[in-house]
Amino acid sequence: MLVIAENLNTRNKTYMDAVKNHDKKTIEALAKTLAEKGADMINIQCSSDGVGDEETLPLVAEIVQEATNLPLCLDSRNAEALKKLLTLCKEPPLINYLSADEKNSEEILSLVNRFKANLIIRALKGTVPTTIEAKLMILEDLIEKSNAADIPNERLFADPSVVHMGRGMGQEHLVNTHECIRALVEMVDPPINTIAWLSNISTGMPQKVKFRVNSIFLSYLAGAGLDVAIVDVTDMEIMKTIYLIRSFRDEMIFTPADIS
Image (cartoon, rainbow, N blue to C red; front, side):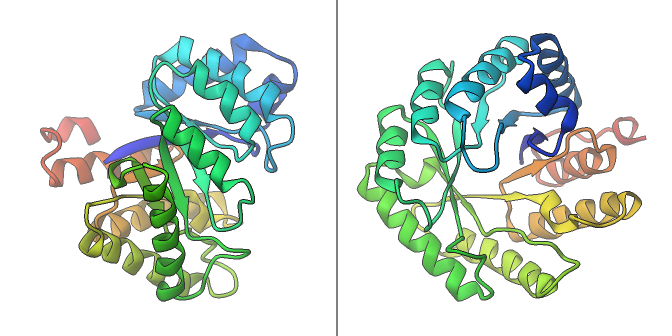
């Protein structure tokens, strides 16, 4: 299981203040901590709507790469920002994300193809669909568009879209997410990667509850065949769960002392 650190996002005040002030030392220190905690890749986000990403994201990308040498997950739909970022990346990044809502999907797909990048395709069209059938229809369409742009399934990461458990149809969505991952693993040929942003499930919950919910949900999705988890790598319970999942999958050698 691949682990992507979610921590450099717009909800992290320390990080966002550092971005605003071009504080290289703070961004560098944050990135190094994520690498030390076990991140395989670092997601970088500087806005929720893409505004200004062409200026801020390249700055962060250079600092994080220099500090960690880890590959990047580029959290933006701003095509101008992606053009700049893709020329800076030392190795092909993962672009987060393309949904059915993007009006510049052809431009994004062209950039992914040109730079041999990887791409998250997300089951989202206006809102997150409430049925597994709707989720799979959106993902199927995005797979077809990506393949038509010469992006093979091996470079695609399908995201069924995790929603808050504590509101609306949250629990029903969770079942759909699990079943969607299982369907993608079993039905898509050539195989496609599956990915989920885990902490979305516990948004709004008390901190002492979040840790347990996120960890158990990760195990639940791992049982369906999840390949990649976007998580808070500073959460020790989550990282211990990932260690055990990797051990159960024979991806690493288990040692009890590692989780004591």
